[in-house]
Image (cartoon, rainbow, N blue to C red):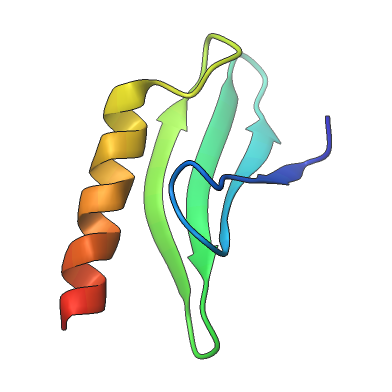
Length: 68
């Protein structure tokens, strides 16, 4: 798996970055905009699938951000 992969289930230009630590594997969900990198969620991932709660929270954050 690449270090970063697209996350179209969250939205356009959204990605999940994989960062390995000594004991855990961390994920950083982010979106690339023209003028910013939005960090949406950082969590320790223990399964292959991204938890639905993380996806829902990221979508809600993007919705609020885009409404500004």
